[in-house]
Length: 121
Image (cartoon, rainbow, N blue to C red; front, side, top):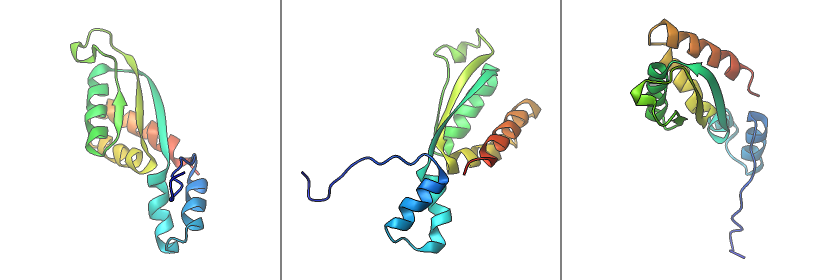
C-alpha cells in the first residue's frame, strides 16, 4: 500500500463536504468557501432548444464544468433535446449567473436551475 493511503471518498452533499473539510482541520472560516467546490452534481435538462444547449455548454465550459449535448446538436436538426449539465455546486451557481445575462428563454432555464440549486444542503 502507498504510504499516503490514497483513496476515493464520496461527498454527495454540502453537509458531507463541510464535515470532511472540518475533519482534516481546515480553517473554519474557509469551510463555506471550499464545500461547494467539493460537491459534484449532474443535472438533466429536458426539451432544451439546441441553440440554447450550445450556449449553456459554452458558458459551463467557461467556468470549468461540462455539458453533454447530442452529437448532431450543431446541425440543429432534432431540436429540442435533453442535455446533462455537470459540475461542482460552485460551477453550477456561476453558470446560473452567466445564463441570467442571455435572452428570456435561457433566463427561464437559469431561474429553474437557481431553484434547484437553492435546495442543495
